Image 1: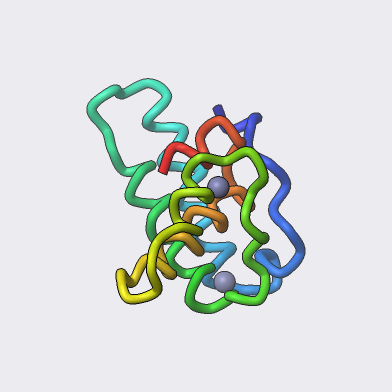
Image 2 (image 1 turned 90 degrees about the vertical axis):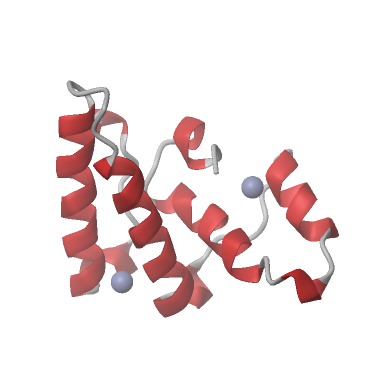
Length: 104
Ligand SMILES: [Zn+2]
Ligand SMILES: [Zn+2]
Protein backbone atom coordinates (compact mmCIF):
# COMPACT_ATOMS: atom_id res chain seq x y z
CA UNK A 1 0.00 0.00 0.00
CA UNK A 2 2.87 2.31 0.79
CA UNK A 3 4.16 2.10 -2.77
CA UNK A 4 0.84 3.50 -4.04
CA UNK A 5 1.21 6.78 -2.20
CA UNK A 6 1.67 9.80 -4.47
CA UNK A 7 4.82 11.90 -4.14
CA UNK A 8 3.82 14.76 -1.85
CA UNK A 9 4.16 18.32 -3.19
CA UNK A 10 7.24 20.36 -2.14
CA UNK A 11 5.42 22.44 0.48
CA UNK A 12 4.79 19.30 2.51
CA UNK A 13 8.52 18.56 2.72
CA UNK A 14 9.39 22.02 3.94
CA UNK A 15 6.79 21.90 6.71
CA UNK A 16 7.97 19.90 9.70
CA UNK A 17 4.45 19.06 10.84
CA UNK A 18 3.52 17.76 7.38
CA UNK A 19 6.66 15.64 7.27
CA UNK A 20 5.88 14.17 10.70
CA UNK A 21 2.27 13.47 9.77
CA UNK A 22 3.31 11.85 6.48
CA UNK A 23 5.64 9.59 8.42
CA UNK A 24 2.85 8.68 10.83
CA UNK A 25 0.52 7.95 7.93
CA UNK A 26 3.07 5.73 6.18
CA UNK A 27 3.62 3.79 9.42
CA UNK A 28 -0.11 3.48 10.05
CA UNK A 29 -0.77 2.28 6.49
CA UNK A 30 1.93 -0.31 6.95
CA UNK A 31 0.25 -1.69 10.08
CA UNK A 32 -3.24 -1.46 8.55
CA UNK A 33 -2.09 -3.55 5.59
CA UNK A 34 -1.73 -6.58 7.86
CA UNK A 35 -4.15 -5.82 10.70
CA UNK A 36 -7.76 -5.34 9.65
CA UNK A 37 -8.97 -3.91 12.92
CA UNK A 38 -6.33 -1.19 13.13
CA UNK A 39 -7.86 2.15 12.19
CA UNK A 40 -4.88 4.38 12.89
CA UNK A 41 -4.48 5.04 9.17
CA UNK A 42 -7.87 6.72 9.02
CA UNK A 43 -7.02 8.87 11.99
CA UNK A 44 -3.69 9.88 10.42
CA UNK A 45 -5.44 10.81 7.19
CA UNK A 46 -7.91 13.02 9.01
CA UNK A 47 -5.24 14.79 11.04
CA UNK A 48 -3.08 15.42 7.98
CA UNK A 49 -6.01 16.63 5.85
CA UNK A 50 -7.08 18.93 8.68
CA UNK A 51 -3.58 20.32 9.06
CA UNK A 52 -3.32 21.08 5.32
CA UNK A 53 -6.79 22.65 5.21
CA UNK A 54 -5.90 24.99 8.08
CA UNK A 55 -2.20 25.72 7.65
CA UNK A 56 -1.77 25.39 3.90
CA UNK A 57 -5.13 26.58 2.63
CA UNK A 58 -3.58 28.22 -0.44
CA UNK A 59 -2.08 24.87 -1.48
CA UNK A 60 -5.32 22.89 -1.45
CA UNK A 61 -6.22 21.76 -4.99
CA UNK A 62 -9.35 23.17 -6.68
CA UNK A 63 -12.59 21.18 -6.86
CA UNK A 64 -12.32 17.92 -8.84
CA UNK A 65 -14.13 17.49 -12.09
CA UNK A 66 -16.27 14.35 -12.21
CA UNK A 67 -16.36 14.09 -8.42
CA UNK A 68 -19.82 13.57 -6.90
CA UNK A 69 -18.60 14.76 -3.52
CA UNK A 70 -17.24 18.06 -4.86
CA UNK A 71 -20.48 18.56 -6.80
CA UNK A 72 -22.41 17.95 -3.59
CA UNK A 73 -20.31 20.36 -1.53
CA UNK A 74 -20.56 23.01 -4.26
CA UNK A 75 -24.37 22.95 -3.93
CA UNK A 76 -24.42 23.45 -0.17
CA UNK A 77 -25.34 26.86 1.26
CA UNK A 78 -22.48 28.70 2.97
CA UNK A 79 -24.14 28.57 6.37
CA UNK A 80 -23.76 24.79 6.69
CA UNK A 81 -20.12 25.11 7.57
CA UNK A 82 -18.91 22.53 5.07
CA UNK A 83 -16.02 24.71 3.86
CA UNK A 84 -13.47 22.88 5.99
CA UNK A 85 -14.84 19.47 5.11
CA UNK A 86 -14.56 20.29 1.45
CA UNK A 87 -11.01 21.60 1.84
CA UNK A 88 -10.05 18.43 3.70
CA UNK A 89 -11.61 16.28 0.98
CA UNK A 90 -9.55 18.05 -1.68
CA UNK A 91 -6.39 18.02 0.44
CA UNK A 92 -6.53 14.21 0.62
CA UNK A 93 -5.48 14.04 -3.05
CA UNK A 94 -2.10 15.41 -2.08
CA UNK A 95 -1.09 12.40 -0.02
CA UNK A 96 -3.35 9.48 -0.96
CA UNK A 97 -3.99 7.55 -4.17
CA UNK A 98 -7.16 8.83 -5.89
CA UNK A 99 -9.00 5.59 -5.16
CA UNK A 100 -8.69 6.28 -1.42
CA UNK A 101 -8.54 10.05 -1.43
CA UNK A 102 -12.11 10.47 -2.61
CA UNK A 103 -13.73 8.03 -0.20
CA UNK A 104 -14.34 10.86 2.22
ZN1 LIG B 1 2.25 21.39 7.04
ZN1 LIG C 1 -13.82 15.89 -4.99
